[in-house]
Image (cartoon, rainbow, N blue to C red; front, side, top):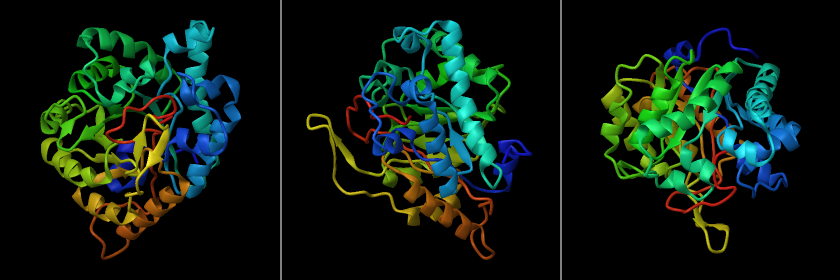
Length: 335
């Protein structure tokens, strides 16, 4: 169902569930995402499977769908033979596919256009390190055309996500200025620092006072790291917080397989909501089954007698194909 109010207004009422990671679900359904574009390749080759994945997440309770544009770039599409006009069409298609699934959902559902970090399009795990050796101005030049193409397609919000570096966050915020859309900014972290090693509180400070930023937080991190980061984001910014960690499994780069137990427990969601989280979901290896559990936790939190915060309308979760501490390769990121 197309939303009748801005996402910021919905967050003022309470919590929403984010969708799950497209890469994980698409790989589970047998699609090869080993190329440098990962799931963005399917925008050209098999767009129907992306729309079907979006529908799986709305069926699980997602009320915010994140587009399959995380790894998309004009440079990457050009290497596959797409000229600028064709690439703009693929960016627009990522929004249209999510919108089609959102329109079919039985409750208000928002579309967030994913803008991944520069490291994601390098396909070398750089989004888990940051510090690319590029100045802020050059990163801004890289991101601006992507943001403009996505904004022209009419999503409800931009998701500047899995940002490993406060310098890149500054570049993304500059590139998004004036695009006419609200946005959220979400860092990938290790402990109390960005992946590039900056103090997380200082990184959150970048959005203080920016009305365009309707939420700030973390994703693609350990579940145990999420609660402290949520509390810090609220303390520093006073804004609604977005939180969508990984499953907690590790990624063995040499053997190309997941290791260790799943440590994402939907029982944590109530604690995150109580601390100020308003967009809650999952990241790497968190699929529709877990998203359904998150939606139940959000609904429980919204019932009379529960701590204030959750909207009975429900919400969603996200996931990437890579794990915390890993050096991910192809297929190891969100979309």
